[in-house]
Length: 355
Image (cartoon, rainbow, N blue to C red; front, side):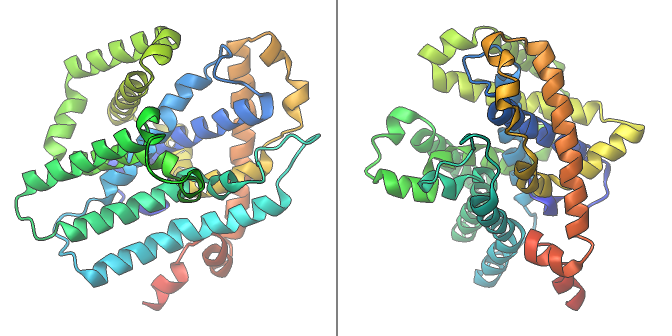
């Protein structure tokens, strides 16, 4: 969701921005279905499949663009890199979280905030993304003396796998000798997604291998088959092999969604809309919570009591498109002034002009 990755005007950036537009739509749809309608994991719905598509690809794309060829890392570059991400990601997240804690909408006591430590990580995605950038920059700095790139890649992959094992495998996570309050404050329950950030880094580093994989029809066929079968038998698989289910659907989901947008990018008006939306994903993510119609929770109880997945999908899609349009309008108004863009959204155009 880091808007700063879209700095080039190449074909690849266009299709990635279009992909990000699709991903942010799936995020908003999941939030509408969950917060406004009350769809849960055990309710027949398209929500679980959208969940598999939305977060891992975002982290993967961020890691992909985090890798820079030819950068001679030193302490100054490390500090500057973390500083830029602090302004671009951490600061606007803090601003919108502070606003949300004070003026968040509610309906008859129904809200998406809990008034406890979990609220500090309500915007868990952007905060995790900031943490992942910091982790990666520090790791690159510490490993700068290793000249063998294959060894570096192996170390990064080991770090990513270790993060998933420690923080996403619940049986291991619960045994970590760390107080629950500390885990909550640090948002450690989300650190397992660092694996997908690292996989994005490695995909960029070994771009030829990655693009060969995306163009290999047998690999794509296997991913489609696995994704379909795992979702077809999702309930028994999640009950007995939850970690295997999540990891398989996440990885195959990344390959499928990126391959689809790479080989079949949107055209015409749809391309312009999706690319523009993809370049404002951070804005939409932070702003859209204020437009979620929580009052619909009681009105749309029918979808919880008598599930109608297809109708629910189109209702959720329609509401989400309106929310995204309102979020983009709000973003546009904020960005009319470079000063408000800097203070609210962390857009440092003022600093760039001065330099």
